[in-house]
Image (cartoon, rainbow, N blue to C red):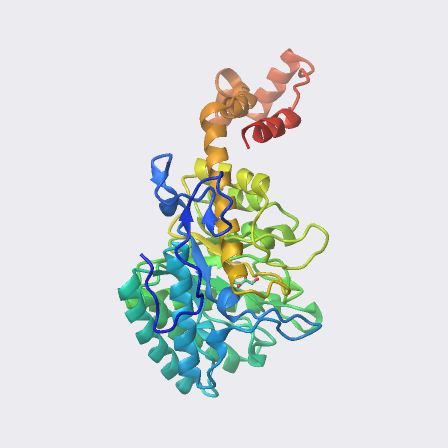
Length: 441
Ligand code: XUL
Ligand code: CO
């Protein structure tokens, strides 16, 4: 059902529906068929696709070399509340036309920050009331909320990790307001991405103090949300650098350490972003697997980087093979715990038509859907699973099984190896695994 706002911004574009891969209609899904079941779950439920408020509605294409190129009609009003309402109209029109169910937001994506905290809080309350009405009319939900603790100059030295307590307290106030807003609109989760929670030079940094303060801050946020009845999950979103030179939540493994070191494992999981993984010199699938192994695969920010450069280009996903490898991890680990697939991606600076926003999200959704279907086929019909388990079959019985179960000593290994002599050479067969993926894609 398409529910139009008070204003229609994407005129001429109707509901995007599934037409299958034979369709030449650029405004139709070729693979994303929301109600199609894969391993007993609909694609809609597997993915929980979300629009990112910041890129889709606030990102006008500015870069360090020039201002934005995109003229968004919902930005026309000079009255901040009217502009926020127009933006909400555009958001709900877009999400419902796409057939998505969710959005993700920062506090000051919804409405512009005011000069004082008190005035900002009033603005947020007003727009939250408006968004609640629109949710009621459309059924659109908030996948997660977060606070922007990195754009304002006051956060130039960090937020929770700032060396000045007054800034830490301001960040705390902002998180309280953002949590209140998230809960008011039924947000299912809350994200911490440590934009400037890191440092530029160790010379002026007490790293231990800063990290302990982050642990303290995260515990306070969790305790406050629980005291208000929040039942959702908190996610840490790892990123190695940019804007800080060293960010404290560098990658999944580092963030899991943060969660465990500060006693947050009951309530925190990870939001893995593709381009953040590649900036950390990992693959996306590696980061998913690290999170899944710790029982912390919570949510995904979907985008991709550029293979030739090293910054966060936030491009829409379109690499089916890369996402297929990710979907193998996704399916085998039972999907996401509480979260969904948030398109934390922006159209290019020179993609200036409003319809480009639709085309980009259609492509992203189709990439994930196609990859899910391929991964499902690979798991069900190819020799992939038996090849993988066969690779470890020496641990299934005998001394190998005893080793796995902790029943052997180092001396036992010595005796066994002594008797067996030089181990046989067994190929890793990487090319065969790769061929199988290609065969099913
Ligand atoms: C930045 C990034 C953020 C977070 C939310 O690289 O990914 O948009 O997802 O603050
Ligand atoms: Co992100």
